[in-house]
Image (cartoon, rainbow, N blue to C red; front, side):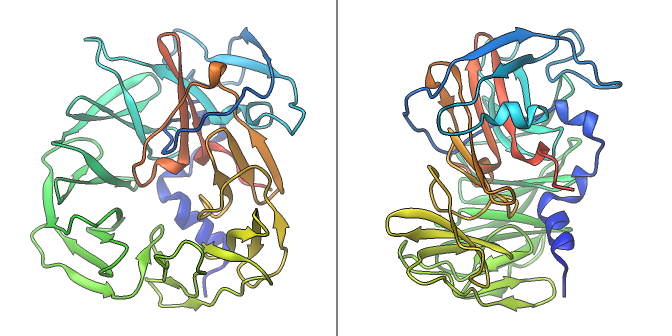
Amino acid sequence: MKTEDDVRQALRGAAESISHHDLLAALPARRRRRTVRRLAAVVVAVAVASTAGAVAFGGGARAPQVVTPQPTPEGRLLRAVHPKAFGDMPAKDPSGLPYQPVLAIDARRVLVRVADRLEVYESGRFEKVAEVKGEIKALAADGGSLAWLSEKEIRVVPLGGGKSRRIAEVDELVNRIAINGERVVWSAPVGGIWQSEAGGRPELLERRLQLLRWPWASDEPLDMHSNVTRVVDLVIGSEVRPNPAPGVTGLRCGPFWCAGTRGGLTVVQRIDGSQLREAPMVRPEYPVFNRFLNSGFRVYDIEVGETFHVDPPGNTLKGTSLDGGETLIYWEEGDRLVVVNLAAIPELE
């Protein structure tokens, strides 16, 4: 049976085993827009990164803005508690085309789309990875490969660039993908979970489950008020049966934590029904990295039991509806994008 540490490592991906001073190259994107009033004023000062070996997220020529935020009446600002999760990058490429952050690859690399190109941004540099056609519905990356779904076709390419390979043509309902070694895994709200490698034949893994984050899947119901009843590790075949606390509906679970609603309020609980508590001012959804509920302007950290606030000037939060976008938050400030990468928040000791 996998331990919680094993699962947490799998969720973050092997490529994220880097030193903390590299986390200044933190990254971007959000999948939901929301209009809320600004919760507090912040005092902004420009500073030089003082950590030995640290690289400013935007190239060595300038350091990212360092904010000295005041606590809001409703809680602390995320930047005050986790400054290394914040970074910045150019808002446009040299020809004036806008960058759209679409996926956090790890704590120091972000995937961006600009026109019909996908590029990796790291330490102030952009590297082209692939050309894409049409709308991208889903993205996935591990330490060495990138997969995407567009125009009902899944393709994969090395993160360092190269020729992309066709994995499969899929149903238009497919909206989640993941990478499993040489194979790409995909699922839709109905139709089960499938996998294939380039040039191979699609193989059905599970008919009644929906992909979460490899290797985890659940029997996610179409009814938003119904509860998940199974969470399965597709590699070793282990299964956990969530136990909803009394009165909880719409339960959505990762391998250890769940979120749902009770009495109109968002709540979180252990998958066995214990440690039930309210998660203020966020929506109930699958915990990101089995730890965060990300509602854009607010992020609830399950491990510390606190809702943190993200406070962009003028409530100019941007985002993406892509699968994977829940790991990122970003907005525009002048000619830069300010980026929050939840993967860059250190684990609790």
